[in-house]
Length: 341
Image (spheres, helix red, strand yellow):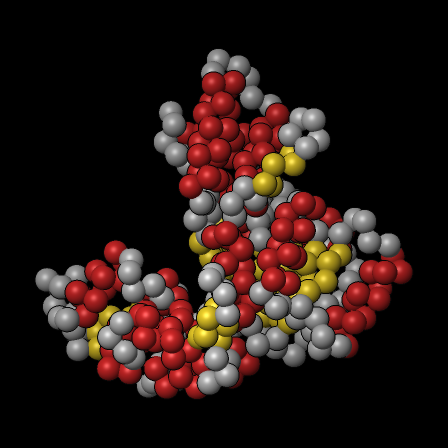
């Protein structure tokens, strides 16, 4: 990049550079010594904590922050116990000043946006997920060797892979094994915090819904849940509150439980925590916000961490029924994702 002689670098999803101790950040610091301009784009410059702004400011405007991370942390946080820090009252002002010059555009101000914008967000598998994903893919490869693969059997196996990427896998005895899914949870949280209005998050598995709800509540994001266990009366109350009351920011929904009939135009953003397996369910779920009464441009965000998820989203968006492609997806899972073959 340095040898290319560029005079301007634009970094999208700039929150990936929030940690000034990473190799990625240090590489960009070295590149910036040879360029005239750096533009960093993000909707969440301090998504998890005020200290997240340090890495961005240190790159784009290094004189606006102290030379050492600890000094900046002390400006925006105070320590209440050995492992717990809380933001100071003046933290927002300090962060704002550190990130100048800056321009913020809200989605409603972008008059040239299409009615619906589709976005992909990468959520890399954690080391634990990666290890189990490889193990399962290898097992699938061994089982497939020399045997005929049926669409039904392929669908079951792919569903197991999706459970790992989501964070919980169901054993043959009905037990649930949880995985470290912090990368995906953080990506979903950042997407929520970027939205100026309410958000729907579609999550395919019941236990994963519990994981996400606990994560959002821990980070002070108000939410409610609609799944198969919620009665019709309770569902109506949840929808009415979501539509009319500002007390709930996010509605977490199991797609099969609420993909038809509901009007949820208080939200203008949908986040797919992971892909579903039905084109009809996918289209109907997206239609919950694309109904009369919607006043804002809409955004559909696909969160993905594997090649199989990328392919499934492509099939869903292009209205290709998965059962026509499921065996090909199965082969990709065992041959391409981690190059096992």
